[in-house]
Image (cartoon, rainbow, N blue to C red; front, side):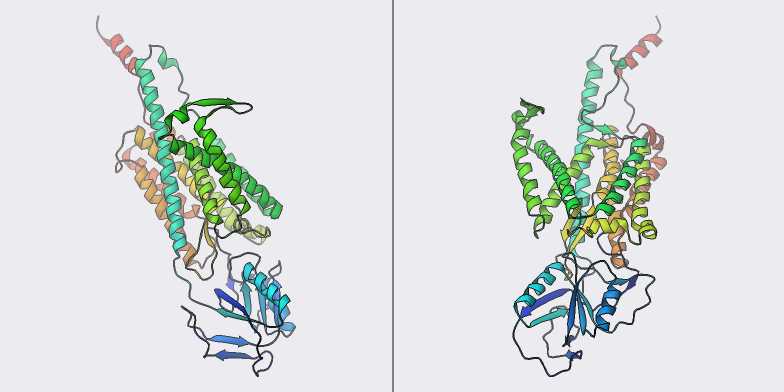
Length: 495
C-alpha cells in the first residue's frame, strides 16, 4: 500500500484526529500569554481520555509548503508564538516527522496539523471576526478500519470476476476449435491455431518492456506532478474507464438482449458497432464525465472505484499471460519495480517516489486517479485507504491464467491451481495490511507480499504434481486432433 507518509522518526505532535472550529465573542481568561492550562472541566469527547489544554496567546498559522516541520516549528517558537497550526495541502492528515539528519529538535510549543478543509474554514473565520476558538482532541484510532476490509474484498472480487470471464472465453474458444477439428477434412491439422479473437498474449520481452515503461511513466509523474498534469491523467482515466465500463456492461446485458448484441450498424470512422453497444455508450460517457466534474466531492470515490474496477476487469480478460514462464518474468520484474520506487528511490530523491505520486503531492489533488480507494469511516483522522491498480492487475494475470488452465485441463477446484492461487493472493494482501499497521502506516509495496505467495504457490504445486513443464512452456494441456489419430491408426493397421 502507498497510502500513508513514510516515517523515520516521529516528530512530537499535539495529538488530534478530529477538529471542531466554532466562532464566539468572549472575554479572555486571566492567564498570561503563552500559559498552558490543563482544564479538567472541559467535557470529554467520545473515545478521548486526554486532558484538554488551553493555550492563550499568539498562534501562528502557516501552509504546509515544502520546508520541514521542524523548521516551521522553530521559526514560530523563535517568534514567541504559543503554538503553530500547519494547514495541510490535502484533505487527509499525516504524521509530522523529522528527517533522519535533523538535530535541532528543541521545540517546546505545540505543533498541530489541520486538514485542508478545516484550514480553509479557519482562514475564512479569521477574516470576518476578531476571535476564533479552536478545540482539538485526540481520540484513539482503531487498529483496523473497515476501509481496509472493503478494499481487500474489492481487490479479491475483481480478480475473481475477471478470472471467470477470461476462463469462460478461453473455454468457449476451445470448444469451437474442437468442433472444427472434429468436423473438418484431413488438411485441417495444417491450419495454425490463431487463438481467441480480441485476446493479446504477452511474451517475456513484452513483460520486461511493460515494467520499464511503467518506471518511466512513474518518474515522469513524479517530475511533472502538478494540477494540469493531474487533469491530463483524469482525461486518460476517463477514456479507459469508459471503455472498461462499456465492455463490462455489454457483456452483462447481452445475456438479456441477445438480438441487440448480435445486430450491427456500420458507423463512419468506427466501423460495425452492435446496437447494444450503441445504447450503452452514452450512459458510460455520462457516468465518467459526471465523476470527472465532481471528483473532489466526498462521494466521488464511488465513481472512481466503479470505473477502475471495470477497467481492470476488461484488461484482465483481454491481456493474457500464456504460460508460467511469462507470468514469472512479469511478476518478478514488477516486484523489483515496486521495491525500487518505494524504498530504494529514497536514496536518490530524498523521498519515496511511489508514495509521493500515490498521494498526489504538489498537485493540489487527493492523489492520482489510478487507484481504488475507500474512506476510513471510523478513523478520526479521516482520509482514504488506497490500493494501486498494479497490485490487482499484475497478480490477477497469473490468477486468471491458473483458472484458464484448470478449465481446459478439466481439473476440479481442489485438484486445480485457481483456488490455491486465489487464497494465496488474498492472504498476501492481508499480510500487506498487517505490515502496514505494524509499521505505523509506513508505505508498503503490496507486491512484496503478494508475489511470493501467488507465484510461489503455483510453482510449488506444479512441481509437486509433475505439471511444471507444461505450465512453464505450453500453459495449457495438449489437445490432439482426431484426424491425426485416425490417420496414424490407419497407417499402422495391417493390410
